[in-house]
Length: 394
Image (tube, rainbow, N blue to C red):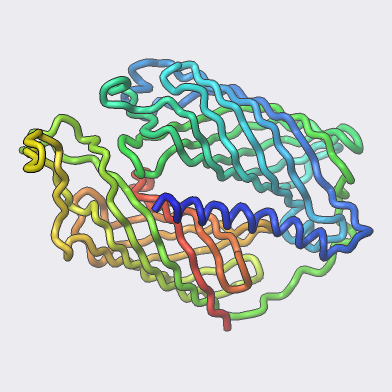
């Protein structure tokens, strides 16, 4: 499973970079590509969303980011269709008030665009982040048994922000805004309460080959090429769970045991435009964690006692749900969301209502990769969605 996850991550990163390369190639040798480098500093607070953070009260958070971004050329239709979009890669060093969280860092992709122009050199913009974070100080049942916020050294980083951009000159911009982010391992290791951050930030950017503020020469937006998009998606993942201590002699609900998760989905999507798709989705899941139990038992091999996990019957591990799916295409990736309800459902720990949020990256005209997260109650992570899909278009 770990090799599969790394392979999908590598494919997504390669595709994200190839989008830039292909666009530059298509624009010809004489085109000068707008791009920028920036330094961004933020200082905020960790929200007290679990008992550990509420108990310690140490919620200070700060981060320093180095970033590289690229924009469509001045005459690209994307400037008009997506409101002056941009995308790139960033690296951040993170510091928290609580030494228990160590000295983490993150490597992430970002994508954003303009909401509206205000007046003079000012404009309002948005931005989304998706990436990888590591080197976290985390829960350990012997060394850090109280740290239920971060359950593993490696976590996924997601974030979003809104900011005011001040265009100071041909080469310099200053951005002032407010954002939020979340660090979580998606229930791949327990405990998994996660960390939520709210922070203002200041960013200084140096631009190369500045993009025009008003794309008067932008090309015509493309028309949609098909009416329906039939998607088949294969899911490979894993998850851990909290084991009930009622009627059991286990010492902790956080037993480090990985359960396999497989899935298959079919979604016939209506293509409303080049940017939006929507439609129903049939989601089939095989989840080994469903109704699994744990007990303190003697091992016949060495005579010692261990916490053993017992799986439920094959029937109880299968889930079938129906969801409504929507996609929004952006220049460098596509964002999607599902809201669904399980028709066949045996898992007593999860509710029937579920949500999926994620990003889709086109690897070829028909093949795509997906990274997302499936959750219940709009807050409780079930597992990461490491997926590969195929589209039949007509």
